Image 1 (cartoon, helix red, strand yellow):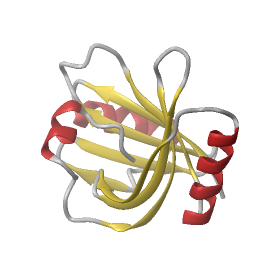
Image 2 (cartoon, one colour):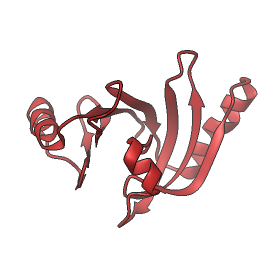
Image 3 (cartoon, helix red, strand yellow):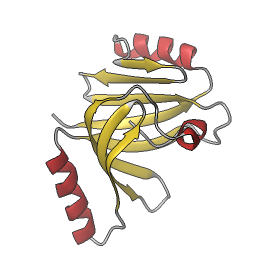
Length: 137
């Protein structure tokens, strides 16, 4: 199953988790300091929250979660054939997960990722990514 991902910057992670738990009638699938993600069945959505009170905007990034590394590769190949600039990040640790992913940027500068989670990780990823509310899943 593929699903759309929406990653948001929030000023208070506890208040945001409380609100989105009520809005979607579900608890986070993963919760860490300053970070939460929800795997929402209906509508099919991966909602990711980054506690980032200094962010200049609400949107952190957008994405599409897919089931396999092969699907990530296929998406990257399709983007390149469509003359989009692709950034590949195989086997990268971000947002407490080891992932394969590819990135593109839309005309307004918003980042989109296509990714699959390979396994959980005990670490967020890079320190700079955590500080900026990285574009991660």
